[in-house]
Image 1 (spheres, rainbow, N blue to C red):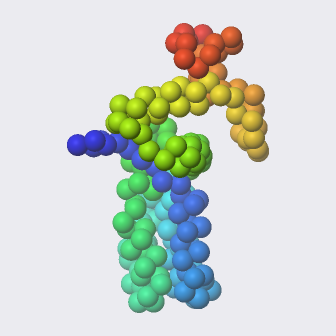
Image 2 (image 1 turned 180 degrees about the horizontal axis):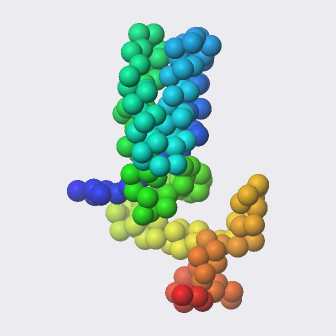
Length: 178
């Protein structure tokens, strides 16, 4: 089946923000059990090792939450735990805790696809997505801030070590290092 074996890391920061937003929507953002549940979940997600996450998860599982919003928060975490902790479950992949780059790409792709409406055939859709992916790989970053500011002016392929100078996005690239 398509996607089997695919490892996906949900953004831990956005997930915790979503839990807080849901608690706010039901007026429970200051209720002690809800604050404690979200705090325990945040500590699990901030773990640097699987062992630490396991200990912290044990504390979360050892609590018996009766508050409806706290129960909902813990259940929501349980449904998404594997995708939230993929960075710990698959350390060989060097996954970041957040997936802002992926979220940005999907947002941009959704905007483009909305303007297109639909494709006549599946093949046209596949060709469009391939061309768009090649284009994105050679397009320099322009609005990175903070610790990622160094990426501005460089494309993802340049950051990966490819020479993209004088190449259009349809020309195959050769690695410059390795």
